[in-house]
Length: 300
Image 1 (cartoon, one colour):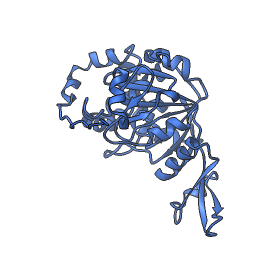
Image 2: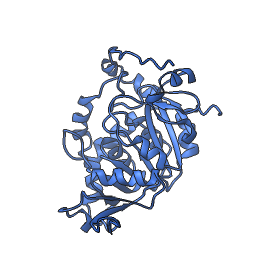
Image 3: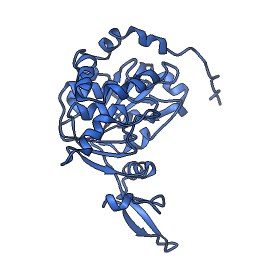
Image 4: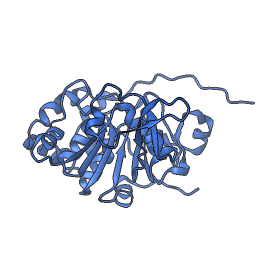
């Protein structure tokens, strides 16, 4: 296998194309803001953004004008309130962005079907809800074994998925621990995959703890080593979630002017994640203290 390590600018320039369906996953944990910021800096346009819980990361991308459509389940600032850039685009008449909404499990099912190369995935969780009335892509099927009527959602095959991991080797084998989302399903469903890792490790480290490998190098297009790349999200064992940032974002995003000031300073005003961290030395307070889990004996 070849060495797949490149910098973030190179990865985004070569793998993210205007008009792509893009996924940046991670459920509270390991959300790759560094990739989103580089996509904004490079002026990518007309993207279809897909994600469970499109929180601050997609609020920033929507405010920067990168997207034409959002495929999602539950949009908000976790524990705080609304996504104001998102609301401005949706609540105006006519809408400035197309939306396609599912339940959480509806999105999981779409990624799972895509990963399994299946045309659709059956599920029960739309009974008693009005979501299917607003989304014509949610259909019904009859179970061939029981005759039961089930909901069905189409498989989702993104053009590009970005997964943030704690560590990866140069071939793209990426290891994750702590809270998981649907990173694996989204990656396997995708045509191209960028792995962004906090740390580059030797292949032997990956082989010594194989059960922690969430994304195999065989499906990875590029590897980017980007310490602090998930801030203000967190990376278990590396740094904590910046809860203060999530609270402050509610005020930052309330007006187009204040949001533009944020993007000008922290996205367009820096060249990369290293410069982003240099102008915010106070973020080092979030660095994790060591709490080591004992290793496993794989001997035979």
